[in-house]
Length: 269
Image (cartoon, rainbow, N blue to C red; front, side):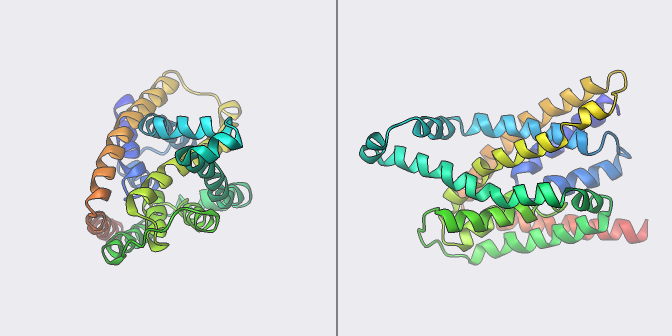
């Protein structure tokens, strides 16, 4: 791996992690085009670590409120509705994470094998496109996040481990389908990604001990991680602007285009 490829893949990861176009799908495609397949899942985990830094910084105020709420008294929460809301969001994030924990513990090896089939990526990108286009027709009903809705959004997140199926797109779409305000659904999607990313890092962290890195490889991985952090933060700012304007469907058309180009490249190369 050279540094240019690491930076390019880091930028791709950062821009697509939060934009509803599938970071894993673009990473698989980018790796194929750049003829870069090592260190594989380890490198992807580091790039996810970069986007984790991005979401922590972008939503630092909400996250600090959630931390304060955990250590606040029940009386303080009763007197402060915002503090109570922050406390409940801690519970909802835990509930939403449970499906991803199940997938990570019991289906990890099967999912990793799917990453070797680029056709799956193109199919899932087309499905992501359908979800984003359908957001045009979903009416907001002012529903709040609660445990049942959080669990369903978590199921969508666990399915989005498939390459090409956008995590942010699937969770925001599911939240909107359940009647949650699109901006609230987007914020919850970003915040609930934190334990999912941490879980992936923990599951794959043993790879650091199981293999030795070539000279300069760790430096390139860290540079790629920095690139993903910066571009990830910019992607969050952009997506929140687009969500407020109700224009998620444009990402759907983009996914259709990438999927079509991908199929054409695969069958006619």
